[in-house]
Amino acid sequence: MPVINVEDLTDLDKAKMEVTQLKLEVKLERAKIIDQEINPYVDKWEEEGLFPAHKIFKILGNAGFLGVNKPVEYGGLGLDFSYSVAVAEELGNINCGGIPMAIGVQSDMATPALARFGSAELKKEFLQPSIMGDVVACLGVSETGAGSDVASIKTKAVRKGDEFVINGGKMWTTNGTQADWMCLLANTSDGPSHKNKSLICLPMNLPGVHIARKIDKIGMRSSDTAEVFFDDVRVPCKNIIGQEGMGFTYQMLQFQEERLWGVANILTTMEKVVQETINYTRQRKIFSQPILYHQVVHFRLAELQTEIELLRSLLHRATALYIKGNDVTKLASMAKLKAGRLARELGDSCLQYWGGMGFTSDVLVSRFYRDSRLLSIGAGADEVMLSIICKYMDTLPKK
Image (cartoon, rainbow, N blue to C red; front, side, top):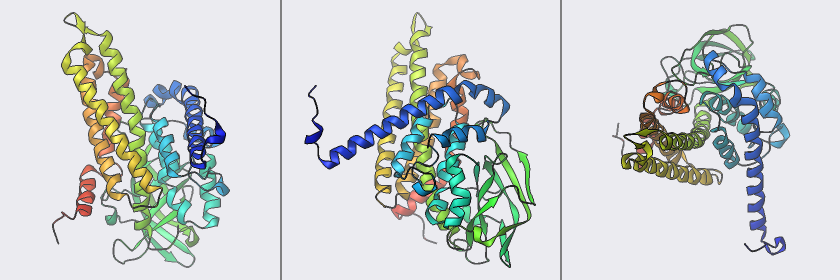
């Protein structure tokens, strides 16, 4: 292999080398944290239905992983979103889906709008401690009667003097039982449903905030999910993120990062499940030969690995366009749609090859089978992704 003379490299080449080096450092540090601080305790946290978010987020915050693309002046690393994608992929090495999801809420779901549109005062109060891991954040969008149909939310914030009085409730709130603050989407006027909403930074310790229950889920068990009610909760009007009435638009922008992050996170886990299935079927025999040697098995695993690589290419293309300022709504929706469907397909196929062991709670594939089902529901159901794609293709029926 020829020796590279650094003096002969262009500025672009040097920049690419620096990016590669930094991403390698991220990978190594992330692996250290996962192997030492998270994976040894995952089974316990899954059984308990809760992981210590404050402890884990502080470890991640100290390592700089909760704000890789957030402003340096508030504790972030100031890098572009591709680094958040790299971190999300590394988080796929955690042996469950719940903890990566909870981390993603903190870093790339509850905070993008605040970082982009929030006032300096709000960033100092809510963004900076979130990046440092000193507080836990949650996102309050979905309600009992309004999940993927965000425009239909009912929670209201009525202005009274220099405060908003908030009444209503939120459902499926990840980190909800442990959160210190919520990025809340609420109706702040009676205007058109796409122009009457605002995002509000809401401290969770205010009078009138009630954690109604911790929801029991079939998967993502180590991540706490809450139903939250608001009864005359008073929040200063200055806690609005950006402009009043722009909340729906801001949330749609947050969804793009959330959806790309979710795709990146599950890619690594899918690869891990395929590899563990290869290892198991290579040593497990049926009719005097390894299960893997049956053509239907190794051909199917090859198909699944191919699908993973195709999805990765779509993710990286969408990310590259996004960091250049392009609207990637269609591509992000396509990637999330494909990721959710592929995860279900892959989980089902791989679990089948594990036989009876796949029907136990002792192996990663069964946990993946349960956890990954959420990807086709959360952050916009498959059917909503299809509607968005059709809108950009101009194939929706005219009203």
